[in-house]
Image (cartoon, rainbow, N blue to C red; front, top):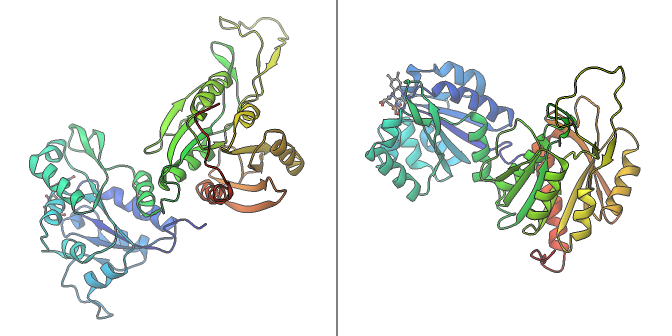
Length: 410
Ligand SMILES: Cc1cc2nc3c(=O)[nH]c(=O)nc-3n(C[C@H](O)[C@H](O)[C@H](O)COP(=O)(O)O)c2cc1C
């Protein structure tokens, strides 16, 4: 499945706030996602960023005024409104919010919005006092009740020197919400448990055994499932990735913590997707104090950790269970063995140790192995796209299952 905004017509409205510079980056990532983006700027926005910058990135004419004459004799604000699949206003000033809330149409952007019938996503960004002003609160409520989507600003230090809500979210977060608003809600109501990241098995208080898993694949699955309406719990080992929107995140360190959290949360899950790279072994007798450099040789004795996937497979009942196999060789044989031994519905196999696939990178090249013995090779693509394909296949399996999951009994 191609990303939901691929080839979609997105109109980016930019109004005159200090965060207008961030809309340049937003445009860049929308173009990277292969959306067709056109930009409408208010006159005041062009005091902050020149239209030329948006033109250079979008390679489309930038609309800055209602009465500009254009080559194709179109009435731009009407034509663009008819063709748009989604509109994002980022940043949205207090002024444009007020105008949209009251149906005022006195410039290109506000007039265009009145003609639009597709989803409109408004990203307010302003000084905290302005954002908390009764008039702005009232106008934002009105926008929501008119059916527009409002992405709440972040809290933090603002350009004006104050601290509080009012900061434009990062472009990646705005893209994530755009994907949410445009995605079909085919996982609505589904309770999905995802695991991600590595675990750490401590040798002493300052050293541990781990692996290079970044958590990116599991986070991508959690994000994709949330965008499609699922109710997600993400249990993750240590990673620097931020919590995905609307996802309950449980952060753990060790394989033991991961096991406890998984067994607890699986009770309420219908679908379990285990991407975590859990340590197979841990130090048998971790040292309570930092081990001092002394002897020339130090022998570490390891013991097996619990096989979480196998145990979940044993308890799974009607749940759909997906595992991942990261291998350095004989992928097919190992993956097929694991599929059966751990009672999985799908195993996602990938060869690690290649620059474009596996640990740490944003892309993955995987093969899906199914219970009926079939397999499906997926070419190299973004982990977000792999996640969506996996969810498509899970939905297909779910539609073939006869009974609803008996999820409350272990
Ligand atoms: C330096 C500077 C920064 C501003 N930043 C913001 C802002 O972040 N948010 C906002 O709502 N207004 C901001 N304003 C005020 C708007 O530019 C002003 O309300 C203007 O009328 C908005 O016009 P527009 O909505 O047509 O773009 C700023 C003004 C200046 C001079």
